[in-house]
Amino acid sequence: MRLAIAIGMAALVADEARAELVTRVVEYQHEGTALKGYLAYDGSISGRRPGVLVIHEWWGLNDYARMRADMLARMGFVALAADMYGGGMVAENRDHAATLSGQFMGQPLIRTRARAGLDVLAGHELVDPKRLAAIGYCFGGTTVLQLAYSGAELAGVVSFHGGLPAPQPDDYGRIKARVLLAHGADDPFVSADTIAAFQKGMRESGADWQMIYYGKAMHSFTNPQAGGANIRGAAYDKLADERCWGHMKVFFDEIFAK
Image (cartoon, rainbow, N blue to C red; front, side, top):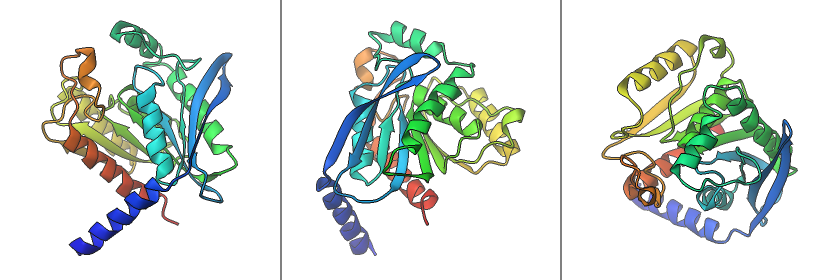
């Protein structure tokens, strides 16, 4: 069994290495704001395939979000890293990032702006609009949860070290997406009360959800640059990063199964 798994993983790595990556900037609009997303797919694959929306951290649509889109494209998906801030803006520092992301918190804009990116992805000629997912990091993790709560036509969403807003009673009947949470067990930015409220809301909603804790992992544990901003409580964890990406792959195998 272990040999079969090893051979299978080797074949997957080889397939990803042979990918003919096609990337480009995609311009779109939302409520008068000009947005610049980043599209990536494997040009060697013919026909429609699942699409995955990527929502960036509070820093904005930077190289990290584009890297994740590239990784998804090499796996055979069409990936669109959405632009939540407009013009492809990237925060200059943590205060700027807090201001940019803060305008979305608790506001309908977080759902409608994300939905605009999802609509662009769903309308792409290579995407099967019946097989869509969304993933997000930190601010983006919060965003994809809100997108799921809005009733978006998604097979699933994955939140990596995101905030954990609880669904509200008005959301309960709308959630169609299956939900996967990848959470650092030592993340100081999400309180025990917040986690409890989130889990209570998910149970009451009847949604299909799962939450995986990664021991010793802190906030932003998937980003190798997490320590560069001198944010106490944020740090990269290579093992947790690799594990949660693998768990996402298993989740995608499930939600995209024909």
